[in-house]
Every structure is written in C-alpha cells, then in structure tokens.
Length: 328
Ligand code: AMP
Ligand code: TRP
Image (cartoon, rainbow, N blue to C red):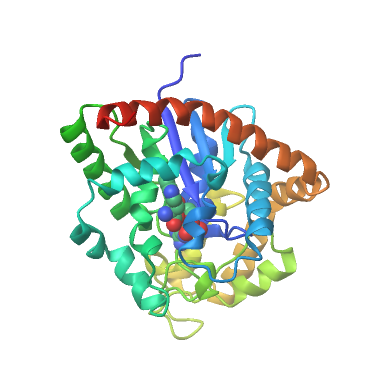
C-alpha cells in the first residue's frame, strides 16, 4: 500500500522512558507506522549539549531502543537508528546554521530555560540545538513530526528555517507539520510540572508493579480538595486525566468521576484503582521488554540496519542541499 508521506521523530537517550514520553510521543510513533514511512532517531548528539558525564550514553541508547521496540515500534516497518551514526546530519546542520539568525536562537524559550538549568554550561552546541533538530527533520524530508507539546517552538523554528533556505537556494527542503497526541503535555506526580526525569517526578514504563504503586500513591491529586468527603474536581485532577487514558474499562470512568465529584470516593482510594489499571495496561509492554532484553545483539543489529537505511536517504537529500547551495 502506498504510504501517505514520511514521519520523523527523535528523542534524547535518557534511558528508561516515562509516561510523558509514552503518551506524548511514543504512542504516536507506533500508530503512524502503518500509514507512513517512519524514521525514528535516538538523538545522542543532542544529548551531548547537556551532558558533561557521558559514560551512560551507550547504555541509555540501548535501553531507549529496547523500550521503543517493546512499545511496538517494528524495525521491519520503521527505520530506527542512532543520530551520530548518520553523520550527514552534521553537514546539513552546518548549511542550515548559515540561514539561522542568532537572535532567533537566543530568544527561543527552550534555550532560555536551559540557560537557567545549566548556567555553568551554556555551550555553543546548546544554542545550536534547534538547528540540529531542523537538520534531523529536513534530512529525511519529513512531512509529519510526532512530539510532545514542549517541542512546538522547535517545530515552528524548523518551518521558518526551511522557508528561508528554500527562498534563498530553491525549493529543496520540506516544511514539516507537528503532530500532537491526545495528551500532549503529561504532568508529573507533583501535579504542577511537566513529567520529566530530571525533575524526578516521573513514572517509568518499566517500573515494577510495586514501584508503580508507590509512585502513584505519591501523586498530587485535585488541589481544591482537602478532606476525604469534600466534593472533588476531576477536571483538574492529574490522576483522573491519566486514569482516563489507562482505564481497563473506560465505560466505568463516568461513574468514578461522579463518585469523585460527590465525595464518595477519596483520592487515596482512587489512586489505588488507577495504579491497578496502570499496571494492567503496561503489563504486556513490560513482558515484551523483559523478553527483548534477553537478546541485546538483536537490538544492536536493528540499530545498525537502521543507520544503513537512514544513510541511504540522507546521502541523497544532503547532495540536493549542497547542489542548491552551490557546493561541489
Ligand atoms: P525527551 O526525553 O525530552 O527527549 O522527549 C522525547 C519525546 O517525549 C519528545 O517528543 C517530548 O516532547 C516527549 N515528552 C517528554 N516529556 C513529556 C511530557 N511530560 N508530556 C508529553 N510529552 C513529553
Ligand atoms: N528536541 C527533542 C526533545 O528534546 C528531540 C529531538 C531532536 C527531535 N531532534 C528531533 C524531535 C527531531 C523530533 C524531531 O525531545
């Protein structure tokens, strides 16, 4: 069957993935495989912009690949590879950097946030992070980019750079569309910040059922509800938002919400129900992960094959871009 176009997405090798990665991005990666030609990249060069300690990079890269496969990415359908193994991206990054205004990079909210987070390591690569991301996407002429909401400014930036490049050198690159999921911004267990490993407010996909239960019981619920019998507000409760997604029996959710609103079930009780449903929903992913972990060589083969297939596309597009610019 003819595919509708090409999808590209990337994620930094942070190792074990959390519910935010899963609901914000990975679920869409999996869903798009049938209708699109998909390219998924573990962006280790991007990770270097924030890392000074790189010893865990290899292991984290391997674990990400493992979890992507466990979640349902199919290496026969999709290209799955590691960014640094397709070096053409750094060359395209260089070409794109020449059409990128400095001021635009300095003003990006994501850059400003990083400067706040790592004031002692504001390196040149960090400033160029979005340019490398634009190179990732355009090197594959991707039409669609599934990501979480936090990446929206980078996608907008990519679209601008594509327009500038094409205006100056001719129509070579493709302007991509962002694709968000139903839950584009998953909140952490603190209920106020985006779920992220660096804030330690996350729940890992590969956690044991016991660890999962423990994390869920720490979740902040409805901030407007103080006592067990107070009426609840499911529309502002992070546990309810996630429960709707992972419910074993979605037809029970309206009743649970009504009980919460009436104050007849308490937050702790609801969290126990959610933890059980979450463990049930993740059971098959966890079982597949354990099975795949028995075959580390297979994971390495998938990445090697992915790099080969990615390079075949990358070489052609880079050549077109260099021709357009006038490089030999
Ligand atoms: P990262 O681990 O930050 O490289 O993110 C990998 C992918 O997961 C990106 O598409 C992010 O937008 C997405 N993502 C990360 N954290 C969250 C979150 N809390 N909610 C929704 N999407 C997220
Ligand atoms: N910046 C993305 C993140 O932090 C990762 C990323 C790098 C990416 N290159 C990409 C995402 C290309 C989509 C497309 O999550």
